[in-house]
Image (tube, rainbow, N blue to C red; front, side, top):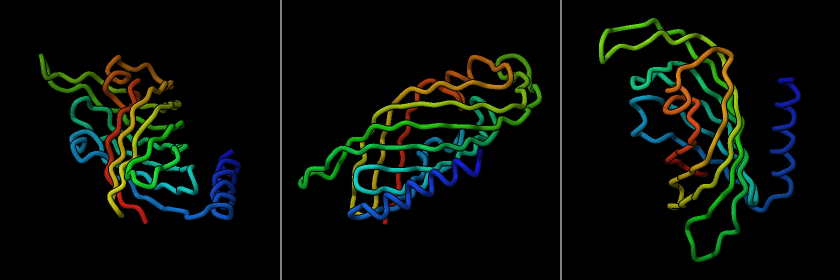
Length: 177
């Protein structure tokens, strides 16, 4: 299955490179304000009006504390940019998969943290966004919804503010070649 997915991705990139006008590679860095909970980034290959992204996030979090790693594949369809505008809108769909590490129960009272089970999760999402070009730098803002299923029983916070949040909101900085 992994070989089929990798072959499909590389085939799409290769075919897109053959037929595109000016292919672009971009590196996305997740919102620096989110460093209290996670760190990560994405690599994007953009050809014509389509973008293919691979991303990885390391959750080490403090509030909520769901340590683990998440990987994602994303496809974007960009609007036709007008020559006088530096921003383009896009529609995206994504697939994610992650592993949550075990965390023992800690503390007591208001600051207590319940036990977090070890397990895997996977899901899909879609939404819209805006890509603002600043020469080689850019700002990327997107908002959408996602659904995630887990192999272990999760607390409600995992789906509200954790890695499986129903709201898929991101504010990224980046550099494009």
